[in-house]
Length: 194
Image (cartoon, rainbow, N blue to C red):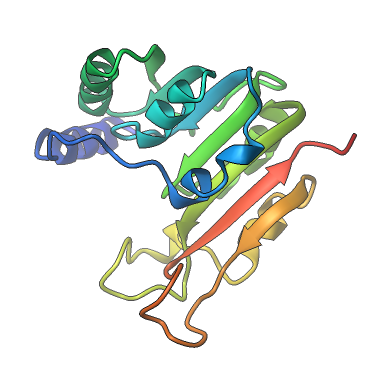
């Protein structure tokens, strides 16, 4: 990422609605897997739907994004909802999280394969990764068109092969494509077993 990426995303978020952003489906549908306490990171958080969800669950929550505009919006929403979120303008590709720093990491609709080893290493013992992003089997009208930002079939499992899968879902274009989870793969994985 660079300054032009920052400017691009700042421009996108300047024109975004002022509603409360929704958390990723992989997180919303699996809150029972979250620990009662711990430190969480919403990486490449955008307007911070995941960060707001994690903070509401009682986790010490950090939210990183390249867009200062997105983080200003998140801070305003968090203040209105009386949630504490530690935001940081950060190019996560140039500066991924340090090893063993988070109990939970959530990544949604962001893909940079070069930092996946750092994400796995950033989990503490028994830490959980919640990941959801677009696949090559998506509807062409939805999400990015650049294949660099699309997962191949089963790729999310391969990228985090060192973690233990807890949940994986990738329906692709099988069956009724107008129903259920389409366009994206979802993974919840644990840093190690008991």
